[in-house]
Structure formats: C-alpha cells, structure tokens
Length: 78
Image 1 (cartoon, rainbow, N blue to C red):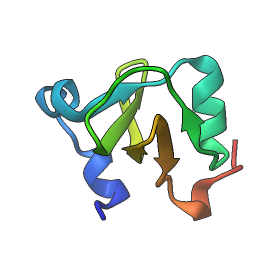
Image 2: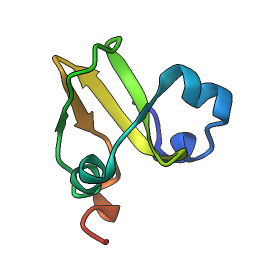
Image 3: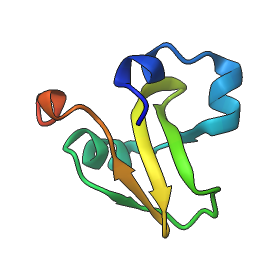
Image 4: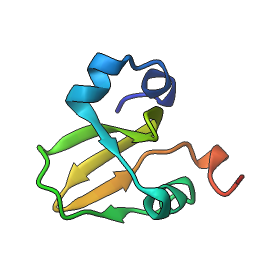
C-alpha cells in the first residue's frame, strides 16, 4: 500500500502514467473519504488522485470504483 507522502511528491511524468484527475464534485467526495464510481476504463491498481494538476492522494481502482486511500486523519477537515 503506497503512502500519502509518496503521492504528494509525485512528478508530472508519474501523474501522466498513474494519475487520475477528479472534477469539482468528485474531489469533495474523495476528501470526505468516500469511494468514487467512475465510467472510465482504467487498469486495475493504485492511482494518484489529482485535482487541477495537483497530487492529492491515492485510490485503488477496481470494478469501476476508486477506493479511497486519503489519510483518515485528514478527512472532513475542509
């Protein structure tokens, strides 16, 4: 399981490969700790979640859902 700090340190080239950009509505759900259903076909595994080009954290993609790996201590702080 990758660490949150690793996602925050990701470089642009890494985001192009394993990043997934969330929209305004999805990022709120992600920061609250919810899973996000998506319609895009992605390769199964961990993705770096991005918002407006910035790394936010990790999610694990499986069965059309991004399972949230945002640190629980940071959820619902916004």
